[in-house]
Image 1 (cartoon, rainbow, N blue to C red):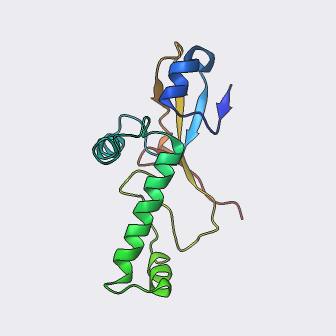
Image 2 (cartoon, rainbow, N blue to C red):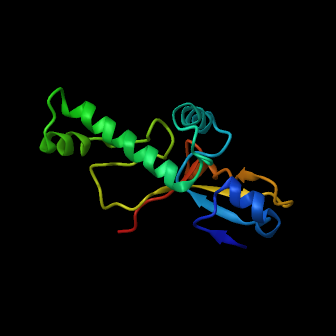
Amino acid sequence: VALSATGFSPGLLAQRGSDMAGMSIMSSVAAQGSPVMDAYQNTMTTYAPELPDPTDELALAGYVAADEMIQGLQLAGPCPTRQAFVETLRRVTDFTAGGLIAPINLSLPTQPILCENFITVDPAGHSFVPAPPPATLNHDGYWCGEALQ
Protein backbone atom coordinates (compact mmCIF):
# COMPACT_ATOMS: atom_id res chain seq x y z
CA VAL A 1 0.00 0.00 0.00
CA ALA A 2 1.31 3.43 -0.91
CA LEU A 3 -0.06 6.40 1.01
CA SER A 4 0.95 10.00 0.50
CA ALA A 5 -0.01 13.12 2.46
CA THR A 6 0.64 15.25 -0.63
CA GLY A 7 0.33 14.73 -4.34
CA PHE A 8 -3.32 15.51 -4.98
CA SER A 9 -2.65 17.40 -8.18
CA PRO A 10 -4.01 16.84 -11.69
CA GLY A 11 -0.71 18.18 -13.00
CA LEU A 12 1.27 15.58 -11.08
CA LEU A 13 -1.16 12.87 -12.20
CA ALA A 14 -0.69 13.90 -15.84
CA GLN A 15 3.08 13.80 -15.42
CA ARG A 16 3.53 10.71 -13.21
CA GLY A 17 0.17 8.89 -13.36
CA SER A 18 1.51 5.44 -14.20
CA ASP A 19 3.95 5.67 -11.26
CA MET A 20 1.07 6.72 -8.97
CA ALA A 21 -1.36 3.95 -9.95
CA GLY A 22 -3.01 2.54 -6.82
CA MET A 23 -1.59 5.20 -4.51
CA SER A 24 -3.91 6.64 -1.86
CA ILE A 25 -3.71 10.30 -0.94
CA MET A 26 -5.14 12.09 2.10
CA SER A 27 -6.93 15.34 1.44
CA SER A 28 -8.70 17.68 3.82
CA VAL A 29 -10.78 19.20 0.99
CA ALA A 30 -13.91 18.01 -0.79
CA ALA A 31 -13.49 15.34 -3.43
CA GLN A 32 -12.95 16.21 -7.07
CA GLY A 33 -16.22 16.09 -8.96
CA SER A 34 -18.29 16.91 -5.88
CA PRO A 35 -20.75 19.81 -6.27
CA VAL A 36 -18.81 22.01 -3.83
CA MET A 37 -15.49 21.38 -5.60
CA ASP A 38 -17.11 22.10 -8.97
CA ALA A 39 -18.46 25.39 -7.55
CA TYR A 40 -14.99 26.27 -6.20
CA GLN A 41 -13.37 25.56 -9.57
CA ASN A 42 -15.98 27.66 -11.39
CA THR A 43 -15.35 30.52 -8.96
CA MET A 44 -11.60 30.28 -9.45
CA THR A 45 -12.00 30.17 -13.24
CA THR A 46 -14.10 33.34 -13.06
CA TYR A 47 -12.04 35.34 -10.55
CA ALA A 48 -8.52 33.90 -10.97
CA PRO A 49 -8.30 32.68 -14.58
CA GLU A 50 -4.52 33.13 -14.53
CA LEU A 51 -4.16 30.30 -12.00
CA PRO A 52 -3.09 27.19 -13.95
CA ASP A 53 -4.36 24.67 -11.38
CA PRO A 54 -7.01 25.83 -8.88
CA THR A 55 -6.87 22.43 -7.15
CA ASP A 56 -3.28 23.12 -6.09
CA GLU A 57 -3.01 22.75 -2.29
CA LEU A 58 -1.75 26.32 -1.85
CA ALA A 59 -4.61 27.78 -3.89
CA LEU A 60 -7.15 25.79 -1.87
CA ALA A 61 -5.53 26.78 1.43
CA GLY A 62 -5.58 30.44 0.42
CA TYR A 63 -9.23 30.23 -0.56
CA VAL A 64 -10.17 28.57 2.75
CA ALA A 65 -8.15 31.13 4.74
CA ALA A 66 -9.81 34.01 2.87
CA ASP A 67 -13.25 32.51 3.51
CA GLU A 68 -12.46 32.22 7.22
CA MET A 69 -11.28 35.85 7.29
CA ILE A 70 -14.47 37.03 5.56
CA GLN A 71 -16.65 35.03 7.97
CA GLY A 72 -14.75 36.48 10.93
CA LEU A 73 -15.24 40.04 9.67
CA GLN A 74 -18.94 39.44 9.06
CA LEU A 75 -19.41 38.02 12.56
CA ALA A 76 -17.45 40.85 14.21
CA GLY A 77 -20.03 43.43 13.18
CA PRO A 78 -20.08 46.69 11.22
CA CYS A 79 -17.02 48.22 12.92
CA PRO A 80 -14.88 45.18 13.77
CA THR A 81 -12.07 45.25 16.26
CA ARG A 82 -9.35 42.64 16.46
CA GLN A 83 -10.82 41.42 19.74
CA ALA A 84 -14.36 41.12 18.31
CA PHE A 85 -12.99 39.33 15.25
CA VAL A 86 -11.16 36.72 17.33
CA GLU A 87 -13.92 36.28 19.92
CA THR A 88 -16.76 35.83 17.44
CA LEU A 89 -14.79 33.57 15.14
CA ARG A 90 -13.81 31.37 18.10
CA ARG A 91 -17.53 30.75 18.66
CA VAL A 92 -17.81 29.00 15.28
CA THR A 93 -17.91 25.25 15.89
CA ASP A 94 -18.54 24.09 12.33
CA PHE A 95 -16.45 26.13 9.88
CA THR A 96 -16.48 24.45 6.44
CA ALA A 97 -15.51 27.18 3.94
CA GLY A 98 -18.86 26.66 2.26
CA GLY A 99 -18.49 22.87 2.37
CA LEU A 100 -15.01 22.83 0.84
CA ILE A 101 -13.52 21.31 4.01
CA ALA A 102 -14.92 19.09 6.74
CA PRO A 103 -16.30 21.00 9.75
CA ILE A 104 -13.64 22.48 12.02
CA ASN A 105 -14.37 23.64 15.55
CA LEU A 106 -12.65 27.04 15.69
CA SER A 107 -13.24 27.23 19.44
CA LEU A 108 -10.55 24.53 19.74
CA PRO A 109 -7.71 26.02 17.68
CA THR A 110 -5.09 23.47 18.76
CA GLN A 111 -7.25 20.43 18.05
CA PRO A 112 -5.87 18.27 15.23
CA ILE A 113 -7.82 17.82 12.01
CA LEU A 114 -10.30 15.04 12.69
CA CYS A 115 -11.66 14.45 9.17
CA GLU A 116 -9.92 13.66 5.89
CA ASN A 117 -10.81 12.44 2.43
CA PHE A 118 -8.92 9.54 0.97
CA ILE A 119 -8.47 9.56 -2.77
CA THR A 120 -6.98 6.70 -4.76
CA VAL A 121 -5.31 6.86 -8.15
CA ASP A 122 -7.06 4.39 -10.47
CA PRO A 123 -5.10 1.29 -11.59
CA ALA A 124 -4.27 2.86 -14.96
CA GLY A 125 -2.95 6.04 -13.32
CA HIS A 126 -5.38 8.29 -15.21
CA SER A 127 -7.75 9.66 -12.57
CA PHE A 128 -8.41 10.22 -8.89
CA VAL A 129 -11.19 8.14 -7.33
CA PRO A 130 -12.66 8.97 -3.90
CA ALA A 131 -12.48 6.18 -1.32
CA PRO A 132 -15.82 6.39 0.50
CA PRO A 133 -15.63 6.04 4.28
CA PRO A 134 -17.47 3.29 6.13
CA ALA A 135 -20.83 4.39 7.55
CA THR A 136 -19.49 4.57 11.12
CA LEU A 137 -16.79 7.11 10.17
CA ASN A 138 -18.73 9.01 7.48
CA HIS A 139 -19.34 12.73 7.88
CA ASP A 140 -20.49 14.22 4.57
CA GLY A 141 -18.08 11.98 2.67
CA TYR A 142 -15.10 12.49 5.00
CA TRP A 143 -13.39 9.87 7.11
CA CYS A 144 -13.70 11.25 10.66
CA GLY A 145 -12.30 10.15 13.99
CA GLU A 146 -11.82 11.55 17.46
CA ALA A 147 -8.89 13.24 19.11
CA LEU A 148 -6.90 10.93 21.38
CA GLN A 149 -6.96 11.92 25.02
